[in-house]
Image (cartoon, rainbow, N blue to C red; front, top):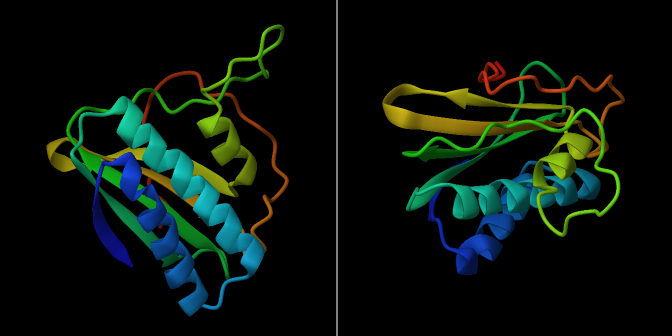
Length: 152
């Protein structure tokens, strides 16, 4: 499923509903659907807050490389997003009220990344494990904003 939606906070519920409907149609587990809805909330919030894009394309599809896995993607055209990095260490001291979106995405994802395409197109993609629970992996800190390859 691919759906073009306006970059409007009032329409965020529509994105979550579209994800739930598509994943229910594909007979995904409730835990995987809940994880996908949270991921979409964070990715779309980043589009609204950090880009000049008037709209975005939401994608939900089965991932061919991992049986039962789902890839959720949010693509924009225009101003590049800020570097998609998760700090190597959690913050200490005063904990900020915001800025946790990619921490949440990283915690839920089997894997994720950002791909740049033609004509200023930027896609953030997240692969969710079949259960919706993250697959244990060693965390690798991001050292720069080099785009990650899109999953096959």
